[in-house]
Image 1 (cartoon, rainbow, N blue to C red):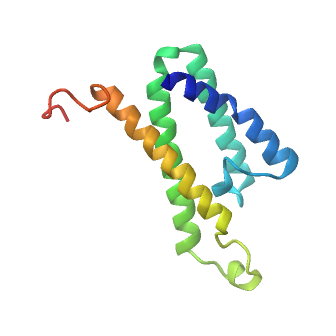
Image 2 (tube, one colour):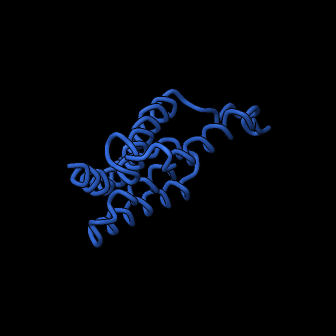
Length: 137
């Protein structure tokens, strides 16, 4: 079941990419709104993940774990840098600050990435309840 959800998630990247660059509705990568180059790279990584799990279905869990971790790291760095490092341009123009949609996106995407990451790690180390041997990690 989890692999089907990941396949749908990664396949939906085409829809989100169309909404983002075609209609200006950025739902999947709002945390990268101010950096179009990184946003496009993020979509490319999601397409690569989709190709990997289609090509090698046995890698689905590890691909999901790595992508979730990368998403969490990107979210944290992007949001932290924009909230901690205030530039002169931000103060002069009043732009570049975090917006409410970006904060909501951070919470939703970050929460989903965290749940996906934890579920994947538990699956990798011994099933849904974690490792069979508590001294394993």
